[in-house]
Structure formats: C-alpha cells, structure tokens
Amino acid sequence: MNKDRKISAPVIRRLPRYYRFLGELIDKNIQRISSRELSDKMGLTASQIRQDLNCFGGFGQQGYGYSVKGLHDEIGHILGLDNRYKAILLGAGNLGKAMAVHLSFEKIGFRLIGIFDNDPNKVGIKINDLTVMNEDDLERFCQENHPDAAIFCVPKSSAPELLEKLYKLGIRNYWNFSHYDLAFEHDDIIVENVHLNDSLMVLCYKISDKNGQKEN
Image 1 (cartoon, helix red, strand yellow):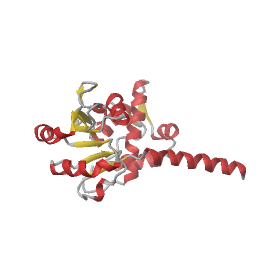
Image 2 (spheres, one colour):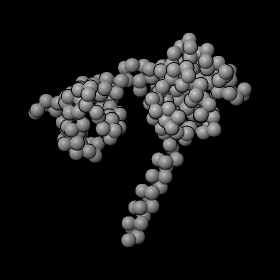
Image 3 (cartoon, helix red, strand yellow):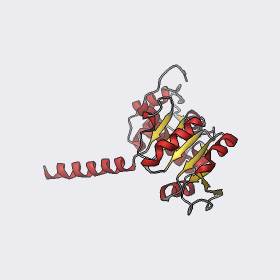
Image 4 (cartoon, helix red, strand yellow):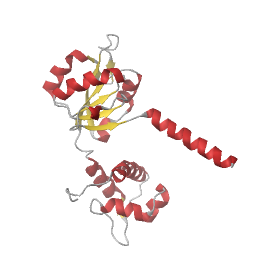
C-alpha cells in the first residue's frame, strides 16, 4: 500500500465488516470467493469491493477470486489487529464492566491492561483478571506500563479532567463513550467517538421513514 495515499473514511469503516464477514466464511470452511459472490452476500457492488481492496494493492486473481483466509489475514494486518496495543479503561460502571467482560480485545488489536474508577464501591472488585484501581493510581500505572490508548466510559462531566491527566502522561489515542468532544481540547490526538444514542436515533428515523412511505 502506498503510505502517501490517503484512504477515505468510508473505505476504512468498511474494512472491519469485510474482516468480520470473511471470518464467518472461514468458520464455514469456505476457501475461495469472488468479488461477485462477496457483493451478493454483503449488499455491496462487486465494483465497490474491488475499488476498496485496490486501495491497499488488491488481493484477488482474475478467474480465481480471493483466498478467504489470505484476504482475512491481510485485512487484519491493514487494520493493525496484530499490534496488541495496550489499553486502559476509565469507568467500571455498567457499560465499562460489560465491555471488559464481553469484548475480546486481543482479537481486535488491543490488550486491556488496567481498569480505573473513582467510586470506592467499585475500586478493588475484579473484572475478569483485572482488579479495578483508583483513578489516583493512574499516573503511577501509566508511567510504569505506558498504555497506548484509553477507553472513556465516564460521565461527560468527568472527561475533561481525565483527558488532561492522560494527555500529560503521553496518551494520544482514545475510544470515547463520554459524549464529550475530546478533540476539541487537543488536535493531535486520535479519537473514535461512539454515540449509542445517535445510532438508536438513526434507527428511529429509518422506522419512521419506512412507515411514512407506507402511509404515502
């Protein structure tokens, strides 16, 4: 892949879908697939799939299609899933705990190495193999373990202070569920914002739009 070529955001956001779908094909022992077969199963055009993959060099052969395992591995490499970036989780409430328990971090590019909360009732509890630590221990922990990323499952009101603390400790990468715009404070950080409410409102719109079309 040409490192100087900027890949569009829509292409990048489709890569995890390719990766997930190809993983399902591997589970079914399917070894080879064409762009046309991929398009039929994924609801994309064959042309779109070829264009997306050509952004990274292209991986198919004329008359052969794609090796499912080979393409799955290549996309995983492009996504950086083999890097195992060290991540810490801020907030051991319902959302944070559910993520720590149910997400297979090591399969999606990260290792969860620490969980923090400022609630005395949560500090000291064990979630999987990690003991929830007090946020007062953040500085020491980060200086000793050098995490690459932080996951914010904290209230919006707590996010600015936590961001400043972690920024000073050198953390520049964030998965943000706090509804606070972290990038507003610092333009040199990488942030992936997740707004569950927004996603549900989009579903609400689609249902309303469909119902409106029926009425018309």
